Structures are given as C-alpha cells and as structure tokens.
Length: 136
View 1 (tube, rainbow, N blue to C red):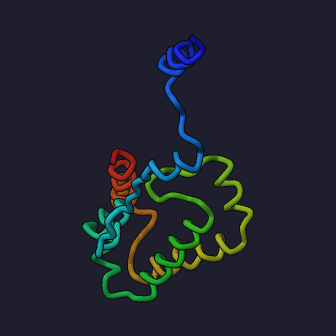
View 2 (tube, rainbow, N blue to C red):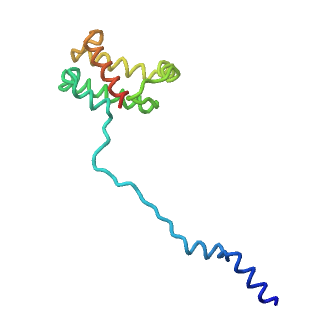
C-alpha cells in the first residue's frame, strides 16, 4: 500500500533534474552582428558635401582639417552633430578653452576660404542642413 501511495505522489509532481544536469541539457545560443566594411557616415556630413560651402572648401585642406578637428572635439564633448545641444551643453562648451580656440580657428579658416558666415545665403544653407539632419 505504501508503495502505491508513493507511486501516485511521484506521478503528480514532475521530477526536477539537479542543477548540474540542468546545465548540461540547456544550450545557449549567441550571435554577433555582421561587421560591415564601410563606415557609417554621419548624415549631417553627407548632406554637407552637397552644399556650395563644401565646394569652396574642397581645395582648402587647412579649412577641412579645422572642421574635422572641431567635429572630433564636439564628439569628445558628447555633442551629436544631428541634434542641437542642450543649454547645459552650450554652457559647458562656452567655458571650455579648447572649444573656443577650435571655433575661432574654424571661423578664421572659413573666412580665408571665402565663406562669408554673415551672408544670409550661407546661414540659410546651414539651417537647411540642420533641419534635414534633425528630421532623419
């Protein structure tokens, strides 16, 4: 009788394997994303290449290097070129001497290249770029 009772109780509860046996039975699957050979180009920069401003800068390596250095500094400071910086980020940048020097260098190199930053056409072209980049 005791044997039958034990068989009935064991039939109701499934037997759980020990933790070691459980680890042997389970297989985990993992995957890694496929690496691409091309770089993921920034949308702002790809759109900037189609502007008249870039046409003026194409044969001015000093201006392009100043812009590249400025973009790297912005990334290092945590600023994304596709979104406008917050007020706090702008205050931090204004207090940063490296940023001020890099910005002055960009302005002077752009002026040497013949880009008038006070021109209404230039301002509208740059504003159009920022709207396109923000919409993506």
